[in-house]
Picture (cartoon, one colour):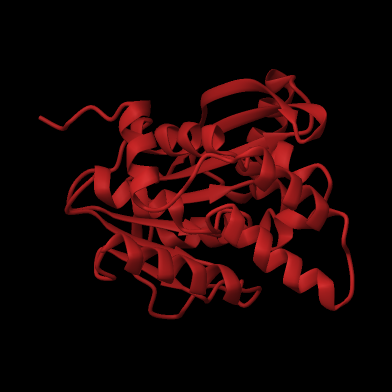
Length: 258
């Protein structure tokens, strides 16, 4: 019988792979970097903020004042999102799980500790993110055969010889819906695509209807459901923000053609 994965187990797994709860000092540094748009100082601040947050702040996450709140890039947000991905239609030992846009790689690394004998692979455009995720993997003592980080996700698609996955994880597909086309091409028949969506307000019912339509337009024939949702208020990062966090699952028919 599979071990039940609790939020506490997810929290401990994230800490073990080097993710730290965001402190006020980290938040202040990220906010400061958020306001810097151009020039040499910009890249330096990104790297310092990225390091301060344990590698969990993507380059793009520092370019919008709303991002630290809307994308839940805080420790509690990571715990919740990883817990959702691992408990709603959970991956099983022996399966292959892919994440498109893995950011700092924390979720895949934590998942590898919680679901042993499962193969994880991530695709990312950012050189900085990929290098950071590989360093984190090395520090955590996780072998690359269990978790691979590949810098090859572009408009031209995924690597030609990419193996199909039983599950494909995507975060915030509404910002770049073309990612869903890649997910559709990557998932096996009978497999599932899991999408974490962040809405701009707390009305997750309206947001869920909208994102389900977006997903259906890119994943025709998939069985689409809202698996989880919550309204989140994030104080402490400048002005407080309210947003919705939603998990959408989309299962490909088992009899679909490869």
